[in-house]
Length: 99
Image (cartoon, rainbow, N blue to C red; front, side, top):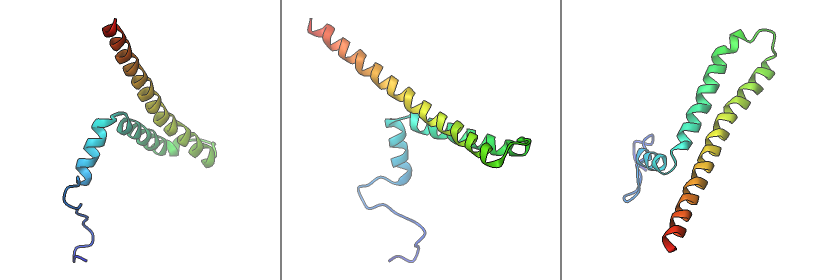
């Protein structure tokens, strides 16, 4: 084992963590968007925790979770619709090219 146990160095031929993250972001850009939306909603709802009034804490946290999940599911749905549209447009272009 090395003396510096807190630093992870990937084996040769493999990407570092930041390179892997950037590659995955280029492959599917809606994942970081969904994650960012989820984090923004959660941060806003935690910020608004003081102004919740007479609402119980558990209800406030449930609403926070539902809103954050809605951002993540929305990003997934947008990605699925975009992929379906892209595949459909490629298929129609191939069909038009065959005729």
